[in-house]
Image (cartoon, rainbow, N blue to C red; front, side):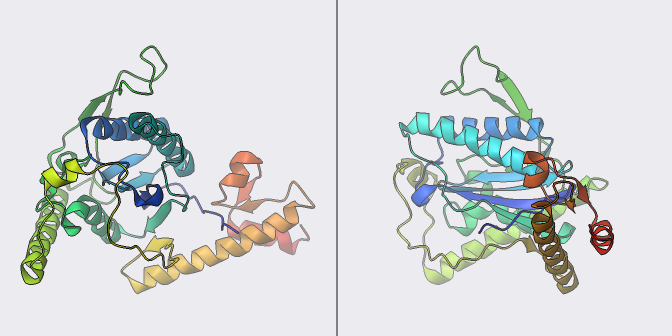
Length: 308
């Protein structure tokens, strides 16, 4: 059984989604890059999601986002749907584009964790030895937007989207600083730039020690959408819910998640007999689809103690 996803307004996440069969269905090209950014901008504006950074690799993408209003599932559904439909038209496909595995949504517990995952996102092509430096990646990436305050302006792709349809002809996407850095953007950019340079240097040293060569832009662009990595990926069944370097924050997050699960399943069992029974705050699907009321955990416990 799929565990319920706790959605609380104001949280920051690392999002990862992979293409089906690890195929290169997001392989960089002009149309794919345009469509990815356009769909991301449309979905983020519709659901008020702050996109701090992103990268579209050939067979998966990463993004770091903040969800101020608790609408992350709607954002993901809309974004993934638009990208999949466009890419299927582009590549002449009719099957699912995304992997059947659940989208990875990792809560980032503090500013340090968020910065770490933003660096991880932007340097992903470097860590995989596809290019030597982040700015060389030919796919959709927010590198310049993050470091230079560049607002990305993208036009509606000519495939899939109707010329006279309801989708906007042009849209803009900017990447605001991570929560906690808005008041000192200079320090934020300096830190981000330094961390990116560190990863680039570490990757170069690794290649030198192992005699490994970088693939390079040309080889990346020559790959076919139906290609996939030669390496065999081992699925260890690990699906982390949060990332925290601080042990205290990890313990706190784990306790909160366990309490939410226990309250959710208690409420679900009670709701089957009493449709007015509330669920814990963070319940998303039942609140959206079934209109259940959501209350803080302490109120939920008080309600059950009173015979609810």
